[in-house]
Image 1 (spheres, rainbow, N blue to C red):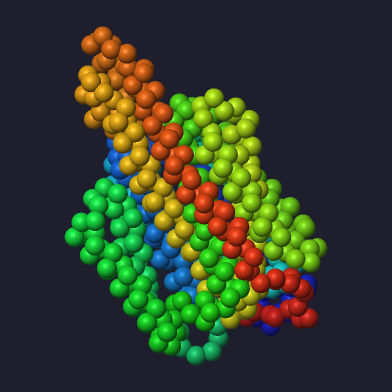
Image 2 (image 1 turned 90 degrees about the vertical axis):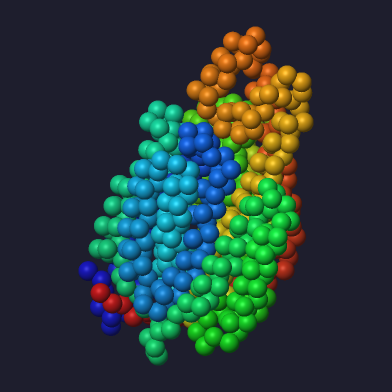
Amino acid sequence: MPAPASSPPHSPGQVLPFRQTLLAMLGMCFVMMMVAIDQTVVGTALPTIVAELKGFELYAWVATSYLLTSVITIPIFGRLGDYYGRKPFVVTAIVLFTLASALCGAADSMFALVLARALQGIGGGMLVGTAFASIPDLFPDPHVRLRWQVMVSAAFGIANAVGPSLGGMLTEHYGWRSVFYVNLPIGVLGLWFVTRYLPRLRSHTDGPVRLDWQGALLIALALGSLQLLVELLPQQGLSAGLLLLGAVSLAAFALLYWWEKRCPHPLLPLDMFRNQGLAMLFTLSLLVGVTMYSLMFYAPLLLQGGFGLSPQLAGLLITPMVVFITVGSIVNGRVIVRMRNPNFMLYSGFLLMALSCLGIVTTHNYTSHALIAAYMMLAGVGMGFIMPNLTVFAQQTAGRSHLGIATALLQSLRMVGGMLGTAIVGTMVSHRYFNGVESTLRGSSAQWLPQLRDPQMLVNPEAQTQFLAQLAHQGQDGTSLIEIARVALVGAIHEGQLIALVVAVFALWCVRRVPPVQLVRPAKAEPASVGD
């Protein structure tokens, strides 16, 4: 049972008894595992999904539709959690995310999958906006929080360790739909523990609650228009419709700034952005999202489509990246509280990310699998050094009054970066791949351009077999044409990953603008009111 409202903290920096704290954190671990497994298994299965549902032009949308709806809902529910307590929204989010996962598995077209992923993103946004902020509610002392976050890191580690391999194995042996159904039992377990043991902690107790719905609508309009513009620009050029779309996005951003300055209860408190430390942490979160999601969604396509590896083998090679996120987080939690300048870990993290991107850009089909796994490992350790520190630094800098919205904005901006990164890289990969194939096919081979313009051929063994049989019937060698397409795809993905490399180097340069954060113990832990 939750502790009564008058109960004092049971240890410095901890508001609940040890047993309830442990079980509540176990529930949060299941929640985090569900989100982590979903991200890792979908990335591995995505090339096969596109090959079966036939819609490579929507490849990036499977990621960006999820990210867009998450970005919109994270700040909304981050603020609502500050007002009403986070538990009701965590419970609702688990139910919504689990149901949306079932709809993803039942999708019969790429468009239906994109819509189901958008619904799943709403649940994911609610989880990110509330679940992450529940942990500092339980542990006001950052030292205690860092120790308990090892549980969350371990949960991420388990999920990330099995995610890529599980996604590859399920896709290869049971079909891609099974990768979405994995979320169902994890969601049920998380729902049971959270409902039973997570208390309802409220920080906001005075005055009426007013949510900035106008700000939320302007955020949706601004980011939605921007995403459409980035996706459609390479295909349509500067048409009148896209110019209008760009004008709508700019106008929505301008209106959002104007409105938030005058709104008495803004969804995005602009005073946080005037804080130099918070503003730079938000910027770094945006930049790490670009690099992280570009790697997560296009490394599987490089390995499967470009190098011809099976989904299971590609998953094994990507596993070090997601496993070492946890390793990096655990190492970070051990050493950062002993460092005079914790910002050193941010430098180390972005340097490792840049080295990983450089390695991927130079990877070819003759590169050893051990070296590819090493590049993935560098990215994982780098993310493990970056993400927990951005969260703790932002929570310390923002203070308790803005804790929820600061945590939510940090996660939201990382997803904005992911949304823009996957959209920009995706459009570049599609454009450069088609141009590469078109410029290489000459003479009689040019007639096969319509079948090779979509790289789903490269990840679909049945389609390849039919294509080779068709060319053999006409006395031509189809293997050389498939190899031409693979070379074009590898070159296109390398060019796309150059963007991630440039962003990682720029982020490394930006770390110097982050003011030093001192992780000191508070003189007295501030109790929160606890409800049933």
